[in-house]
Length: 63
Image 1 (cartoon, rainbow, N blue to C red):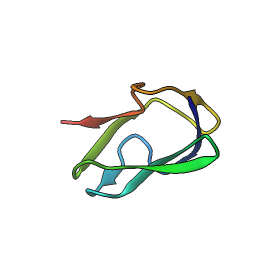
Image 2 (image 1 turned 180 degrees about the vertical axis):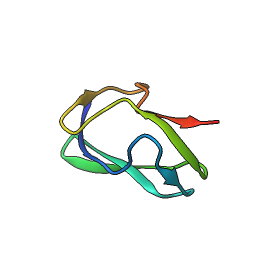
Image 3 (image 1 turned 90 degrees about the vertical axis):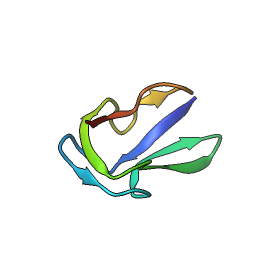
Image 4 (image 1 turned 30 degrees about the vertical axis):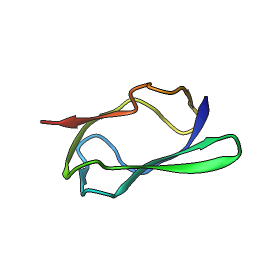
């Protein structure tokens, strides 16, 4: 499990491939979650301070 320490986008944000979207801390290491493609964010399912686990949806792209 990890903890969301930063949410850098919101619903409706336009993002570019490689842009940092979230930061998650797990085992004392901070990990950047980056955009896998250009697009628009449809929903963000987490907020700062949330505990998350492997495989949990964090956000969704609009198609």
